[in-house]
Length: 66
Image (cartoon, rainbow, N blue to C red; front, side, top):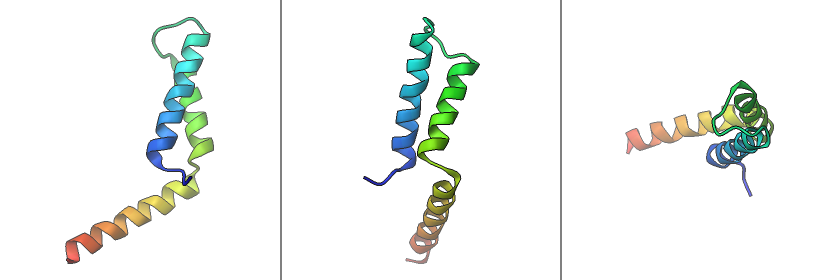
């Protein structure tokens, strides 16, 4: 399965919620946000973000040309 922004975001959200619940809270704090960012960066590193941003940009130009 290809990692996408949406999948990485959902998995990271789950990780942050797990962190929150494990600590007995019902709202995120900075540690939960950090858990989200750490997991997101692990699943969707900068190289993928750049690749996908270029791809989206290329699609935008193609759609405009049609």
